[in-house]
Image (cartoon, rainbow, N blue to C red; front, side, top):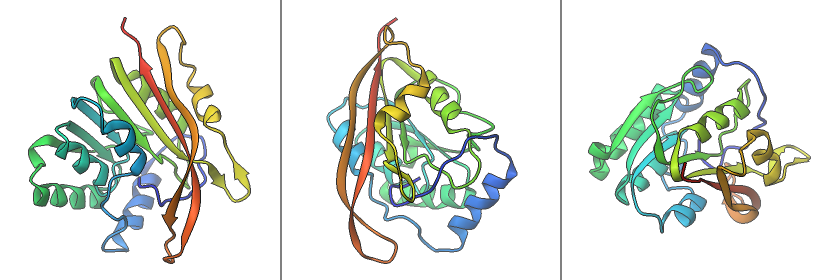
Amino acid sequence: MSDELHAEHQEGLGDAEAERFWENHYSRRERVWSGRPNPVLVDVVGSLRPGTALDLGCGEGGDAIWLARQGWRVTAVDVSATALDRAAADAATAGVSDRIDFRQHDLALTFPSGAFDLVSAQYLHSPIEFPRVRVLREAASAVAPCRLLLIVDHASVSPGSWAAPEETLAPLDLDPDEWRTERLEAREREATRPNGRRATVTDNVIAVRRLAR
């Protein structure tokens, strides 16, 4: 899901409610997100050698299409069929359909198989029940040796509540003998609110590399 979404995340088990919620979220508007890639993804990944990427909560495909344009082969997943249809149409327009495999997953219930050179979880928040820590642990498990897990969060997780990047990383219980932290920072940026007003927001950036085994 894109970086404009600001929602409280909760822990729990997913069911059909998630699909209904996100289908309604996308179907009530012709276009939800800008189509541009998330800036932290561009910053962190832009210098990496392209390989295979897993884009979790891909929404309308802005990140997946950008990755494909850089030469990555992308598996892009989302729970909303409407979002995936839009993403696939935009990928076709961009001429990168052959580099992206769009798949529908409720990540609370199913997770893509395989190992990837990059696993990206950009703003994987949800206002409905969602087992976020478990999903991020599965994301870490999907990272190939010597490759990267990139998580970007809203630092403000609910009105008046702020989280540090360490609070996202710690529950993943990553073995320091198997992982190296490359970025763990809070970063400010300018964002456009749904009402069109500009504001300074803070993102938590976590980039960890799995070591060779």
